[in-house]
Every structure is written in C-alpha cells, then in structure tokens.
Length: 80
Image (tube, rainbow, N blue to C red; front, side, top):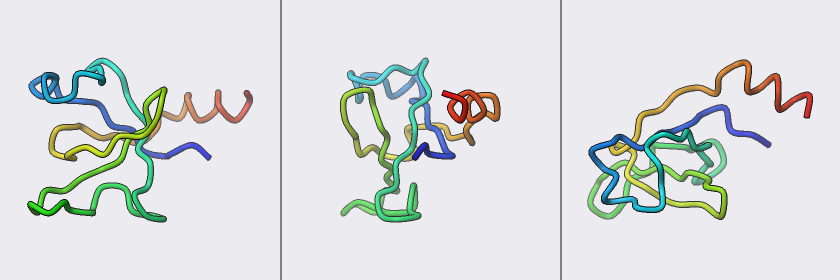
C-alpha cells in the first residue's frame, strides 16, 4: 500500500542525512498503524519514518517538509 503522505529533506539538513537527497520526495511510512509524524524521541523531538529505495529511515520531522501525494502519482500507481 502506498502512503498518502510524502516528505522531502530541507536543504539546510543535507549534511545530517548523507543518504537522502533534498530533491526527492520520499513516502512517509507509519511508525505505528495510523501514526506518521506524531511520535517523539527521547529528547521530545517529533520523528517520522520514511521509505527509501533500500529500506526505512527514522528521521526528525522538523528537518523535512511534508505534502500529500500528488493526485497524478496516485492515478499512475493505480494503473501500474
């Protein structure tokens, strides 16, 4: 199942996440069923989980911008 939400790394945080590109939108994967960006780490920072081409990565939500999946992508994936 495809996530309805996507995240993109903010350019000022590229050094912190060398495996991620600030030019790509990544699917946001639930941390728990239905929970995408509300969980916090031990320091109280909101985190999210994104799916990369290889695996999943848990990141600080404040370092990313979020959007809903564009309609044209959903339509293309439904017909694939």
